[in-house]
Length: 315
Ligand code: AKB
Image (cartoon, rainbow, N blue to C red; front, side, top):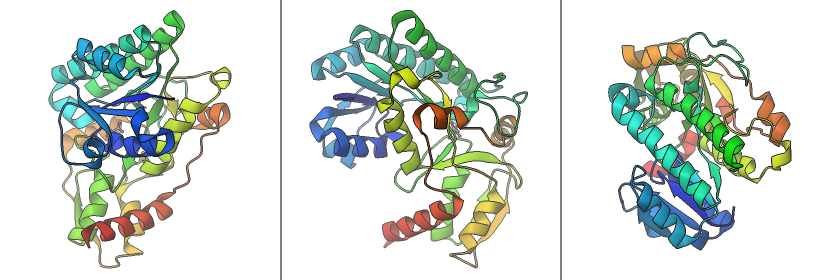
């Protein structure tokens, strides 16, 4: 990765990844793009271009103008929004992906895009879900993710494009909010613990899903992109995870810092049924073996850091 184009750079992952890549590869070697502008550091502190990922010509022009050698394609609708607007999700998630793959093929770029635990479905083995297993998701987001994994494999086999990807669990961060995901409760709970001392969860108690703290997710992207290609058997869509948790576990951990914190429930049937169709926990052995994946943050360490950083933000 020498000159990197990011799509969806103002999203939850992009906001922090842009920063990390600018620090690692140099500010002038990272071109952040998004469909909108804001007044964040992503826009103000480096190269930034407006880009609608469904506009293939505009994407090709920006990549050509900056002579990029890597495309990190993040722009996508998350699971709950995709379920509310399935046709928009198909057009944006699949249209954006195929455009980004085509630009990468034409301009010979290395390519990364995230998949998700959403690529699994209700008949997937629920515990320690293997790397290679049944994938019959019942959500539009899941359909997009499985199709995306296969499309990235296809570009690798057919055109020799250096495509790589991770199946991310819910990502937790104090910098930019996720928005439209099923796992968002695990971010909101920390914000509301600091702001109100209580949280009403739309995901029911006892619903386990995998999660990961953002610093581990960013390291995983960079480490996979830098990994020796000869060692990658799976390339696209490696299972990665740091913890398998449910709301009561997060609440118990928060109470170690805020003893009066209370959690109650008002379950959202749509997001609950999405969560119920996903694994309780996934197995990241292939990522560990093929490129040395490891997560530094468990629930305890992440909770301490989240609450400290959110307190600092509030002050
Ligand atoms: C979502 O909940 O939609 C995402 C994901 C797990 O892909 N956070």
